[in-house]
Image (cartoon, rainbow, N blue to C red):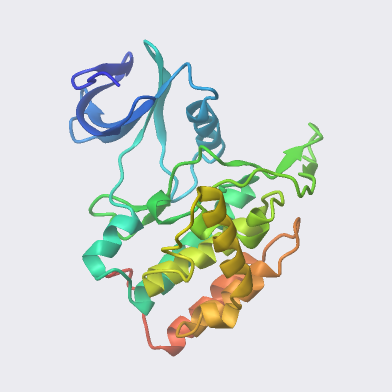
Length: 304
């Protein structure tokens, strides 16, 4: 994409100037900007070419609108068009958990993983309560706030998110209907953290966000997953091998050395397609073990 440093976006008293490129390619880009009147107000700006086959950015904007006010979800400051691009201006946040791993010898302590789990279960519950499933939870999509809020976790990048139930009544009772079960759906999200049902092309639902989180927590604890570094002739063969290893590895083997995650993963993987997860229960599972290990929820993570 063309250089956008110095470009001014927004309208009236809500304008931003781009000061730095974060990353870009032929079709999209991410930049850092600040408010014209308040330079201390830093934001992130996403660009997407209008001629993209489908606008993930507009889809993401609509999801953020639905999640407005949810703790741990960035706020949107402006959405519009600039020449041949759709543009989304949102909160600027800190490093991802993937980036922070390298600061912490490639894995986090048990205490830090417990505290990460506690916050993320809350975030996922709030997202689900707004009738949204993320479908793309992985360490690069979990970021910390900027100082002094670097002990608060945010879930970002909702371009693949969707509603898991839709309103079928517009009266005061707000009746909702869960999406239909299907076993012929194109998988979404990174294969490393995909649920087994996603591998089997089963429609994504709330249970899959929670199973995916389980694999994320194991990865943050172990530093790797058993299906990492698979070699294959093609990407399709690699995906198939990952599925075989994932399906052939028992939860007890997967969680060996991390018994605090075994009950969580067992619960997540046994949920029915349209079942409402008991978020309080799974948070309590981890909280009880956390306190038995004499840890305290001081929110001082390894990277701090």
